[in-house]
Image (cartoon, rainbow, N blue to C red; front, side, top):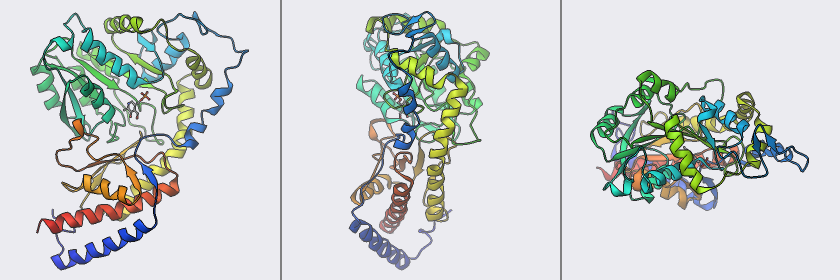
Length: 427
Ligand SMILES: Cc1ncc(COP(=O)(O)O)c(C=O)c1O
């Protein structure tokens, strides 16, 4: 179906462009300085966790079950922190390691381990020729940066409304032994905000990889990050693996980066018992045991899954109005034109925006000119190469509602102008 601009006469289109250019001149004169670039919680959100800082004092008992907090030991993490992480991910605590403050760091360590040392009794990846990782796109730029940093070839895989295209994934994973991994954010994906359907999760669990050292990097970063009552249900990948009679296939990650403090949360990984034995051995070379004061503080503060959910409801109260504002502004400004599309997530940190073909770079660049920083166009694709140049990641959590509102008003004008210019240029 033709969009509203395609239906306009050239005279009408020229008049519209002139009118929108006038608006952008007005905006430019306001010398805005707004940031919609990265998925970070706002100061109001991080303030929710400040009481955690009062829970560790010189009088706090520094023991946790058989764990000693103020000395080496319990390299898998404090028992109570492992229980908390296991509850968040819905897995067995004995298969969880809590380590450090960044899940991305754990992912990097495990890619490095496969690359340098090898896993599952296979040669290190660096000795196996050109290895590959699958990158459902649009996806998380920092995932793609990890594999790219080792010279691993990142292969884009189409993302749909219910997860990656599993026919493409199956063909590549089962047909090509050079494929060693796939990056997944199965719930409230970065940036589309979609949650993988049961069918997609089951298809992942049923994979029969050509490479015995292939692993799914299941980054469940947004597992508890719903905005409200309507929380998407994600099938537990380990339950699906059991159902499929499959094993040693998934590394699952999580962290409290967006529950408590980004870069000062606790991070965790879980996998099959055999994979955990390998991971434990790899980590044992890296450090004696991990930082435990933060683990203790998190357990004292969050207690259990119910405590986490309580905390997340407070985040939701702050975050939900921002996502509602994005939906309202985009619908009011662009809804009836048919020139763009965007996602309507129930949780997570992002809205994924699809403009007309060939528009994303121009939109982000004009936004910058007008004083609004957005995530770079193309960042959601491997090597920054969005082949149709359509995808823009909107990150609404960090700015104030007022700033977000101004930024979205600018965005609507800019999208219209770029789309109108593209249509004009095509005539
Ligand atoms: C999908 C995803 N995974 C991981 C991270 C980073 O997590 P961490 O701070 O635990 O390294 C982010 C941060 O934006 C993310 O969006």
